[in-house]
Length: 338
Ligand code: TRP
Image (cartoon, rainbow, N blue to C red; front, top):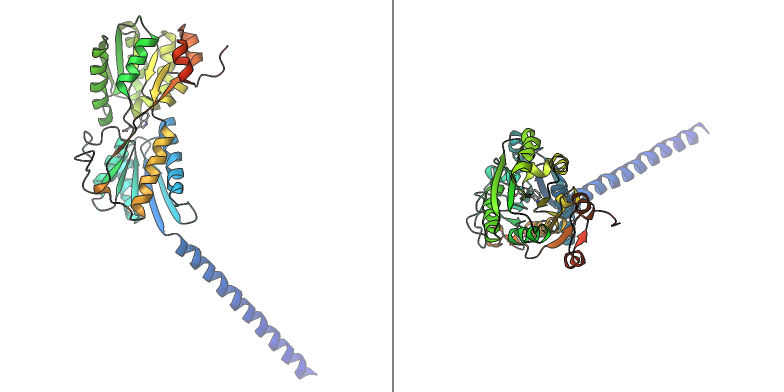
């Protein structure tokens, strides 16, 4: 009897151990499998948070997915936000390079520049860099060479200012508000200046040294110009609520270069959709990561056409009649019309 009992106990323990061994083994095989599935790594460095860049980032993930790279399935994404701080951008770039990603995306010029400084081997994809040549990132838009290519968010500047003259037929002068610290703005300011002069407007430039001075500068502009033009400038985009607040006190219309700034209180624009820019960046990155193309022979992508965007609430506030012809083709981001 005793012996049989002992035998059962021994067999029982053996069974438990064996079971444990089998299931344990199975589990470790499973984790191994899911690790093997993560075949791609992509690093993203975003310069700062503002509505346009946040939309671009969301678009990037969709673009990667369109090309079969799905987060938590076969793709690991390392995301960092530099919060407009140059030293943070440098450290984060180093960290991203050390993660051995197959590609790094820099959203906005300063982020792309920080990444480009850290690596000459890993592909760097420019995320909405307006002027890649002027920012010293590539030699040629058509043949970038090196490890860099990407997407430019260059806006239809002439058409935007022409729209301003249609909405504000009395306007004689335009003030350009931008940050002197951003390489991407210099080129746009020159382009805006030329376009405005061709359209018969007088142009004044207002370069802000830092976000702190923005309200004061808008007040000065109120005395000197008939409307404000804002290029694709990250500093101003980040401070848009205070710009709108100040401009509204002065009844000063704002024509920005991007739809997100119209949503925040600009009057109107013709804009490249920011989400679409992100999708394009994601798709281009995926093709490079999969080895289908190389940065050196992928031309910088630029969008051809923008969408008409109006803010009817803002128009009403400013006492501006938007012509029917423009209303018909435009998307209204200003809520319901009364
Ligand atoms: N083009 C900007 C750059 O090169 C980034 C950017 C994209 C942006 N969309 C924007 C800036 C909208 C201001 C508003 O850095």
